[in-house]
Image (cartoon, rainbow, N blue to C red; front, top):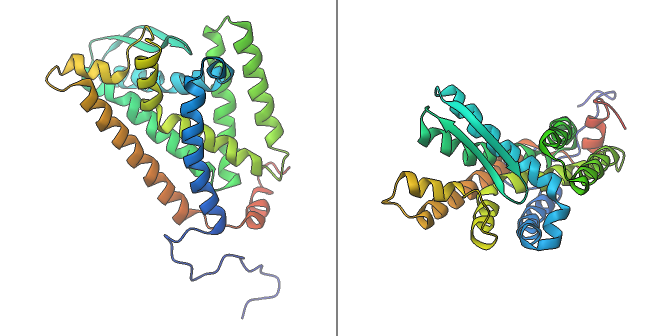
Length: 259
């Protein structure tokens, strides 16, 4: 018997941990759709400009991971480039080059995985929205393009507005989009390298230069499989950890900056 004043969770207590709920199945489908959509938008000349703020956020975090690894391994940062058209580049002197180079894709994958979890729970999405809000603004220190600045303000406005749509339910899908973009950064990095011949080479090309016996294609396959594995792992974590229904999420999120 439950006391009358204790609410009973709507989620069935005997649901197997790895069995996704209806809401979680939607997240899985949307994740796949987002991956396809981002691949298209990232490579369509006009559309790719419209997502410049999200690209800067993604590239900026990737380069930040290189910087952190460089500092931790005793390296010195000579220069940093974060550009939606040229790509990112961190020039380092000293340190441990293999660790510094690998940190970019590893960091992007794990960071994106955290945002993928936000797709399963509105409270997590609210918390990570502060990270996203700060991350969108920070690259503007290096940006002088007026259109990119205006688009950044637009995406910031969306972020704030989504707090008030369906008790921040819309925020889940925004964060999930950002999560997929970061988790599969190697794919966008490679397509920029192959189709747009950006000035800054992909990390896979850099790995090939560092280890000439292993081709860039092999490195590309390795990192794509790695990031796919990370994405699947975080999806499993989301399925196991966040079993709340939409109604329960609204109740839970109401205690953290309620909207």
